[in-house]
Amino acid sequence: QVQLVQSESELKKPGASVKVSCKASGYTFSNYAVTWVRQAPGQGLEWMGWINTNTGNPTYAQGFTGQFVFSLDTSVSTAYLQFSSLKAEDTAVYYCARGKGLCSEYNCYPEYWGQGTLVTVSS
Amino acid sequence: QAVLTQPSSLSASPGASASLTCTLRSDINVDTYRIYWYQQKPGSPPQYLLRYKSDSDKQQGSGVPSRFSGSKDASANAGILFISGLQSEDEADYYCMIWHNSAVVFGGGTKLTVL
Image 1 (cartoon, helix red, strand yellow):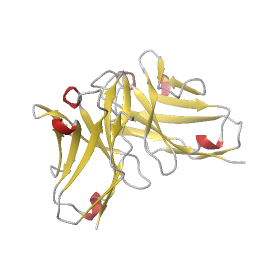
Image 2: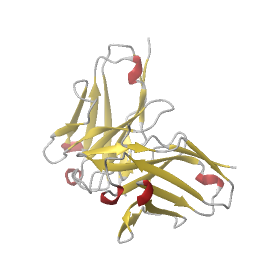
Image 3: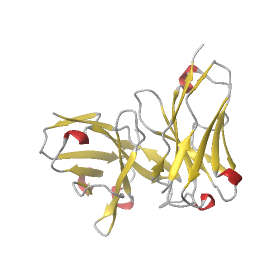
C-alpha cells in the first residue's frame, strides 16, 4: 500500500536550518509528484509547491520562494524539504503528499499524505 | 478576496445532515472546476474524501462512505460537501481545494461540530 513516512519533529533556534524527509513506499516513486503543504498551529492548509520526481524540477507556490528548497534522493525514494533562516513564524506542521501523477490540472491534488513533521522554532 | 471561502464553523446534530459550502471568488466560475474535499481530525493529516465537478465527473475517495457526497450551487458559485446521517466521528475540519492558475488552492476550512 502507498505510504509516506516523514522524519520526526524538530526543535530549532531562530536562524537555523532544517531538513525534513519524506520516504515513499508501495508505488513507483518517479511516476508521482511529491507536494508539500504547511499548516501553522490552529491554521489552515497552505500548498507550498511540488517536485517532479522524474526530473527533480521543483515548482514553488507564491510565498514559498527563496527560503524553501525541494529535493530528492530517488535511490531511496525520498523527498526532502529544506529551509533556512528559520523564524518563529515558520513553526508549523509540514506535510508531504502524493498526487495522482506528475502535477497538472487533474493530477496534483494530494491523495496520500505523510503523517506530518512538526518544526518548532524557538529560542 | 480569497479564491475559496468557507464558513469557519458549522454545528449539526447526530443523525442530521450538513451542507458545507466552498464559495469561489466572483471572477472564477465554479462550473469549470473540480472541487476536492478533505477531512482533518486533530493530530492527523488530512484525508481525501472526494472530488466533484459534475454528476458525470466525480470520484469518491477510497473507503469513503457514501454518506459523503459532492455537488455545486451554480447560483452561489459554490461547491458543496453534503454529509448525511451525521455521526460523532464526522466531527472534524473540512477543507475544499481547487487547481487554479497552475497551483493548488485550499479554502480556509470549516470546523464541523456534531452535538
